[in-house]
Length: 273
Image 1 (cartoon, rainbow, N blue to C red):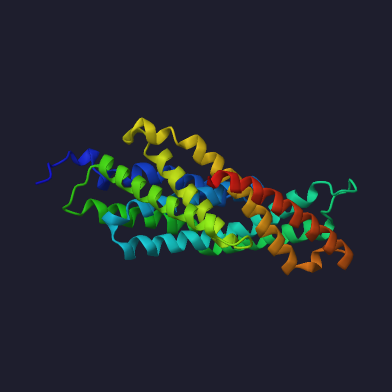
Image 2: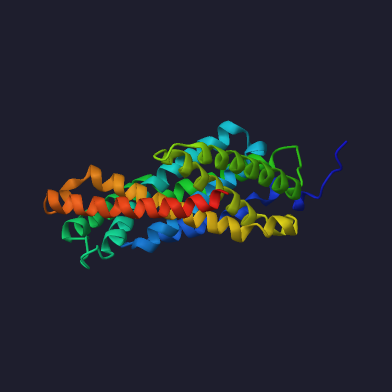
């Protein structure tokens, strides 16, 4: 029989402790009248961390309830994500090409401004202030009315182990993936991000060897994140040739992105072994 734990130390009672700062951060960024690239980025991070937190508590909440809330957070993050994608495109093409000239023009800047405006409208319509606070309240209520008490330390270790095994499987699939199969590589990035967030959430509840893995995990995530930026930008601009002055400009930009994508793929590949 499992020994009863102090309610103050149970995972059921601790969810709000982890979630409330993330909700506050998301609402602060979403409430800005004229959010910039960094604001959209930090909003996405807060929403992604909340999704990871709900995944961590899913065994206690039930799959349906947890995934319903995670789906909403994913949609909200996607709205900020479109603006973020254009920010990355401007940054990547703002670097000089082989002739020493910037590949980012006014049309690309205009597309970025339009994406930011659309994101602001979508996030306003989503009513994040009400939705996130209601999510926190409903989740807290469901956990605290449960008769079950689970030590937060046990939940932390079990979910970190689950995330580590999943990442290991994703790395193996990426190693076997064909050269152009970036979906498998993208899964590695997401798995690394989830494990990193969990280690950062639960640091005091984990063993020292778990925390020691954080630096290598950050390096893996950074390399795969850079690769994802190049792949996503290449796809975005191939779908929107109108942001270039002419076909020659589009071809030059896409060729530069292709070279950068290959360079970043080689760097990411080193992290798989």
